[in-house]
Length: 175
Image (cartoon, rainbow, N blue to C red; front, top):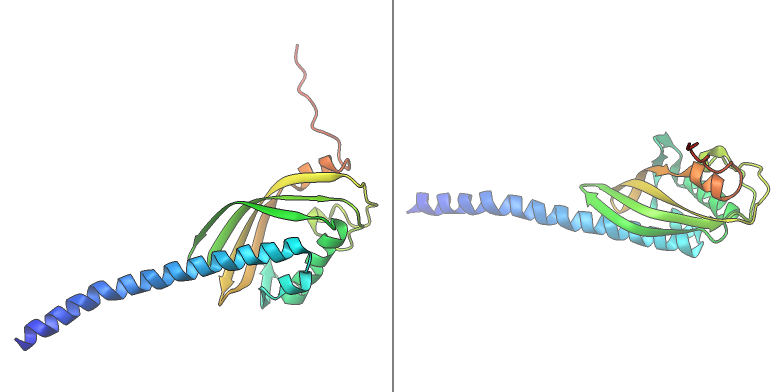
């Protein structure tokens, strides 16, 4: 009888432990998505100091160690260059410690960039006062509710064309 009870207990553990781990993983994934939604909301509000609190002290941007302070300075430069910038989430997917967001990035060029963000193409460029809207994909890796890595694919060329800083796409010749 004792062997039956031990075998039953082991069978319950074999089923319960993976389910518990799956539940914890799903909870962590949801928490990471919530963190990124909050982070983007605060970015949109313009409070870069508060937004930087979502970033780990040892964070990396595009694989380079920049830390929280480096990210804050970059975010402030983007806000200075585009005081009305907005990120609008179109889609979000998450797995494990990663959250990927496809979004629109829009704003009006009203300031002079000082840091080599946006492909470095706006450093020292006088404001055009033109509005743009392009798509971005941002990939975040989180640890303990903080962003530890950030990667992005942006349409900097499209943004520069909309700002009038690059020529429009040439039309194909048709005969």
